[in-house]
Structure formats: C-alpha cells, structure tokens
Image (cartoon, rainbow, N blue to C red; front, top):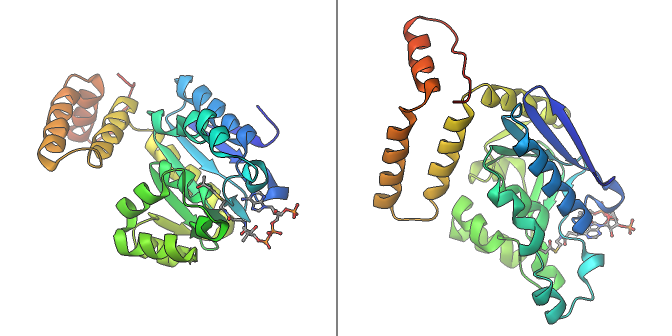
Amino acid sequence: MPESIIRETHDKVGLIRINRPAAMNALNDEVIEGIGSALASFEADDDIGCIVLTGDSKAFAAGADIRAMKDFDYMAAYQGDFITRNWERLKTCRKPVIAAVAGYALGGGCELALMCDTIYAAENARFGLPEVKLGTLPGAGGTQRLPRAVGKAKAMDLCFTGRMMDAVEAERCGLVARIFPTEKLVDETIAIAQTIAGYSLPVLMMIKESVNRAFETSLAEGLLFERRTFHASFALEDQKEGMTAFLEKRTPKFRNR
Ligand code: CAA
C-alpha cells in the first residue's frame, strides 16, 4: 500500500483513508491506484461487509492532481485513458461503499464521493466542481452523476459557477444522506457501516445492484430486475433466518449464504 493510502479494518468494516495532506489529498495515480488495491483486498476478504472511504478533517480530496495533469496533451490523456484506466475501480466494487466527507470534496474529489453508494458529510464539508475555473470540465463523471443526484438546475449552477456548497445545502439537495459533527464523522460512519455489515452480504449486493439499475434503465425494466432479484432472495438461507428470527423475536444470525 502506498504512503498516501491508509487501510484499516474495524471488525467487519474496511476503512480507506486518503493521506496526502500536503496536497489537500489531491488524487494522483498513486492515490487512485492505492484506493483500487485497498478496495480489491476488502472485496476479497470474506470478513468485510462494508467499506468506508474518507480523507482527513481538512479535505476528502481537493480534486485530480493539477500539477500532474497540467502538461497533458490530448494524446497523453486519450492514449493513457486518463480517469477510465484506474478511477473506475470503484464502479465495479460489489460491496457497499460509503464516502465520509469532511472538508473539501472538489472536482475529482466530489466525483469520487459520487461514485460511492452514499455520502455522509461533516459539518465542515464543502462540495464543488470547480473545473470551469481551470479551463476544463468535470471528467470523472461529475456532469452525469451530479444531475442524477441533485437535479439539472443545481448541477448546472455548480458546474457553470465552480462555487462550493456546504453540507446543509448538499443534504437539502440530496447529494448527502446525513451530516455529523466534524470530529465525529468517521466514528459515526464506521458505526453505521458496522450495522450494514451485520446484515446478509448477498442481500446487500442485491440491493446495490437493484438501486444502481434505477439509473441505467427504464422503470419497467428496473422493476422487473428488482422483482426477479427479490424472488432470488428466497433462495438464501439468510432470508429463512431473517424471517424466522423475526417471528421468534430474536436477533438473526446471518451467514452470507
Ligand atoms: N491538485 C494539486 N495540488 C493541489 C490541489 C489539486 N487539486 N488542491 C490543492 N493542492 C495543493 C496546493 O497546490 C497547495 O500546495 P503547495 O503548498 O505546495 O502550494 C496545497 O495543496 C494547499 O492548498 P492551498 O494553499 O490552495 O490551500 P487553501 O486552504 O488556500 O485552499 C482549496 C484549499 C480551496 C482546496 C484550494 O487548494 C483549491 O482550490 N484547490 C484546487 C481545487 C480544484 O480546482 N479541483 C479540481 C481539480 S481538476 C479535476 O478534478 C478534474 C476532474 O474532474 C477529474
């Protein structure tokens, strides 16, 4: 694991901390590839049920590394498959991934958070897509995922102006699920992730696939996918255990099968 990534396990939760404080956690290849390897190791670990991605109290990540990309020409970006090559590892992760955002989540940092399944924010979080100020546009999914999360008007406003929005505005517009005091953000997120990780992993994976379908397909097709997946859940021992435990008034013991 590179120095710029800290990987920790907290019982059934895998925690990935971006650790490049001198550059506001700007995302260079080392950071992105470190996140990819940490994700791969947590995915391969049967004891991990939920993953949390965070930065530090000043910055989740202040964007792609401007120093590293300033001199790119078109062919360097295109042939090198900039972004697609290594950023999209998050998209293929099948376990739940929560972004815990304190401080700046700008440009690629905001886009990285948008690639996660949900976002919890600290009171000091600041979200924005300031690429317009640099003479470019969001390139890690911001123009696609932000409007799906917050609607066209807010997304256009943020992309056109490059302004930052605070945690309260981000929660109000649906980008953020919950807000916590800054010093409690990571602990509270880990606690929620522990609860999630206590549920049946195959069910969590089915939920993730089904919710993601909502953004890829028509309502009728999405409903069909959900219905068939719901039917498939009756093949799980965990479904029998969950419903039996409810009726017997006890806590279920899920075994991920
Ligand atoms: N890339 C490289 N270095 C960065 C960086 C970035 N995205 N963001 C901050 N840094 C570096 C600064 O250059 C500075 O380094 P030095 O100390 O060596 O000068 C250090 O981090 C601290 O930053 P500041 O002195 O600027 O700190 P500040 O508190 O005054 O401001 C900030 C903080 C508002 C986050 C400001 O740093 C900032 O605006 N950063 C750039 C944000 C940005 O434009 N992000 C989009 C990048 S493009 C992109 O992400 C493309 C994409 O879609 C994939």
